[in-house]
Image 1 (cartoon, rainbow, N blue to C red):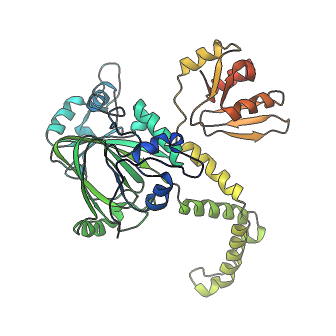
Image 2 (image 1 turned 120 degrees about the vertical axis):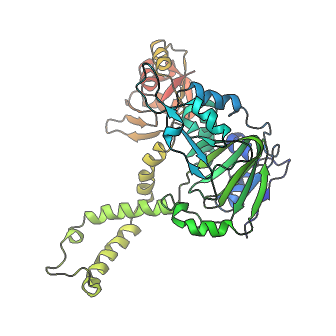
Image 3 (image 1 turned 30 degrees about the vertical axis):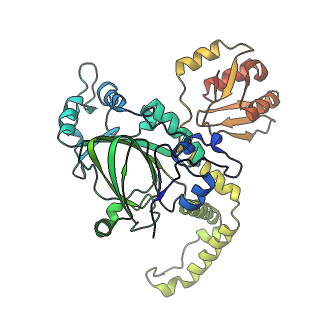
Amino acid sequence: MVALTVAPTAGLMAAQTAASSPQTPALARLIGIDVEEFAREYWGRQALLTPAGAATTGSGFADLLDADAVDELVSERGLRTPFLRVARDGSTLADASFTAPGGVGASIGDQVSDDQLVRLFADGATMVLQALHRVWPPVLAFTQQLAADLGHPVQANAYVTPPQNQGFSNHYDVHDVFVLQVTGEKRWVIHAPVHASPLRHQPWTDRRRSVERRAAETPLIDTVLRPGDVLYLPRGFLHAATALGGVSTHLTLGVHTWTRYGVAEQLIQHALRTVAGDPEARSSLPLGVDVADPTALVAEVELVREKLVDALENTEIDAVAAAFAPLARAGQRAAPVGPLRQLRAADELTDDTPVTVRAHLAGTLHERPDGGLTISGRGGQTTVTAAEREAFLDWWKIGSGTAGELGIGLARRLLLTGLAVAG
């Protein structure tokens, strides 16, 4: 039986191996227990409710998003679908019901219409602001830090629901979520999974009847979230939420976890590439073979199975990590940089200009035959000559230095390829 756990009000983060709360500031804000305990008892296993004030910071989440921010986003930022969805009575409304042409000088037919949103919201519809980690700076910065704390990619949506209304019916997500109650109150009803730890290609709609039956049972959790409360739900847990007494806004931080199934995928892909290099494995099946006859395939299956098993057993861990590297890099953005600011900084470099590795770069270094290095990251790629190597590695290890210590030419290249920032 999975039960709701409430974090102690005075809980503080402790060390997780070598990491302590100052090194996991975003996660520390969301849980009121030790990271080790969260990792051992809750991560991917059971729900955790952290009441306002229980974590290391208990000031609520208005700094990430508030009512004024929501109004600004839907009325002044020129959002287009799919950055906004609108739902009512458990169903998503057609885009045309809340969008309109952009007007003179903007040949865009699907900008969010604030006029239509006013009517829909007053009529009980829920606004879903999607991918806020791409469009709203405070949420962007927080989700980037949370992703760094967790080691898994993070996205952010906001759900703005009128009083006494439910945006979506019972369902489960294929990613973990942290629910941050921003304003108002929302009742959450949670049921145990019908399919534990679902993968991304296993949505709740594939098990709609099972979900409906489970939702009719006594819930595991029936609680009201108030401003500053945080609810962690592993993927697969059924949930439905209803606003109470006033407009309710919550942020859902979706954690797209790396899974052991994903490791299996990379192992199998590597094994297939290995087998593809074997002429015997590439050879044709016998003339006249009936592939629908199991007895005709016995020898072939055994031969190929043996080759696959051998390839799997001899796969180096480095090869699996190398396969994950581009996926991890693509799963999150580096910290934002302004093109004009970067160009100005590059043009105005002096020996004393501070130069810092761009945050959340996910950079990697590769040796070059000439003794230099290639540095790649979410920002871009550049090369380091053998003569620049020592100064670069000192800077890379520390994470910052001056343009003079790096060399003006290298510092400029790092800035213009988005691998570094000035300051």
